[in-house]
Image (cartoon, rainbow, N blue to C red; front, side):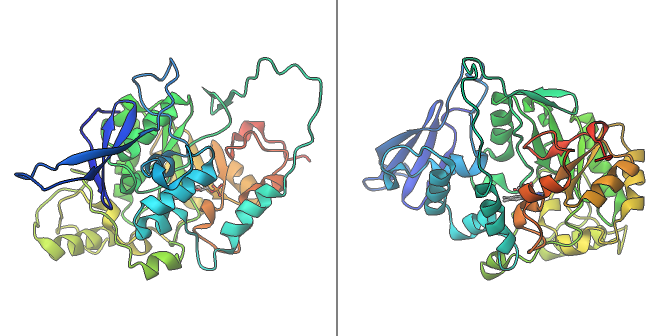
Length: 384
Ligand SMILES: Cc1cc2nc3c(=O)[nH]c(=O)nc-3n(C[C@H](O)[C@H](O)[C@H](O)COP(=O)(O)O)c2cc1C
C-alpha cells in the first residue's frame, strides 16, 4: 500500500496512511494557509505483515469494512478482535448511506437474517487426539492453489470505504494467497500485476458489445476466469438505499470503453443510458461512468440458459455462474457446459425470502468443494 499519500477526512478526524499503520489526527488549531494544524490522536495497525506479504500489501479481513472500521479505535476497548467488532466500528466510522449499502439486504432483510442464523445452526463435531501440529487448509479452485477455502466475493464500491478501493482488496487477496473475484464495475485497466488470480464478475448488458468488451479486457489483463452473476437480471429492492436516496459514484474505471462525443452534464449521463439501453449508436458519453448507470434498465433481463453459449463462445477463459441456489439449476449449469458454479443468494441483496446460502449447500451435496461456495463440475457426482 502506498505510504503517506492518502488523506481522508472522516468526521473531525484526518487519517493518514503511514506504511504499517494509520495515523489519526484531529485539527487542534487554526488553519494556517490551508495547512492544518494537526494533533495525532491515535495510531492503528491494520496490517498484519507476514514475511511473505511484507511490502506487498495489507491483510485486510474482511476487506473493506475492516479497513475503515480500523479508523476509529477510540470507540473500542482495545483492538477489534473479530469480524463483528470490525463491523460495529465500520458502522460508527462510515457515513450512514455507505454503511447501509454495504450491510443491507433486500426488502424485509429476512434472508439476510437467515443467512447468519443458518450458519449459527451449524455446529462442529470435534474429533480428539488428532495431530494438529501442522494444519494445512489449502485447496484448489479451478486448478489454482489457495491457502484456505476462503475467497473474496465480488462486491461493489470499495472506494467508499477506502481511497485505494479494489486495489487494496486485491493486495489483501494476494497476501492471503487466495482468489479475488472483482466486480465488473471496478475492473481496473492494467491491474493484473497486483492480482494473485482474479475472476471478474460481469452482468450481461442489453448492449452485448459492452459485455464482450469487458470480457476481452479481462482476458487481456490476465484474469483467470469469468464469473457471470445470474441472480441479478433486475436489481434487488434495497429499501435502505431507497430511503438514503443512494447515488452511484461516477468513477473513471472504464475510460475508453465507449467512444466519446457529447460532453455536458446531464446530457452525458442520459446519452450513456441511451447507449446501454440500445436506443442509439450515434450518441456517446465520456465512456467512463459505467458504474453510474441504472442497472435495472441496462442489464438484460431476458438473459436465459441459451445465452450462456454466447458467453462461452467469446472467451477461452473458464466461465462460472454465480447465484445458483438449487440442485436443478446446478445440473443445468453443467449441461450448458460452464466450468463451475458459485452457490449464492447474493448476500441476501437480491431476492428476499430466498434460501440461506449455507443451507443450499446441503441441497447440492455431495457437490461441494469449498466453503467459498465454488466447485468445479468435473467433481460433481449427480448419482446420489
Ligand atoms: C456491498 C456488497 C456489494 C455486492 N455487490 C455484488 C455485485 O455487484 N455482484 C455480485 O455478483 N455480488 C455482489 N455482492 C454479493 C457477494 O458477492 C456475495 O455473494 C455475498 O456477499 C455473500 O453471499 P453468498 O454467500 O450468498 O454468496 C455484494 C455483496 C456486498 C456485501
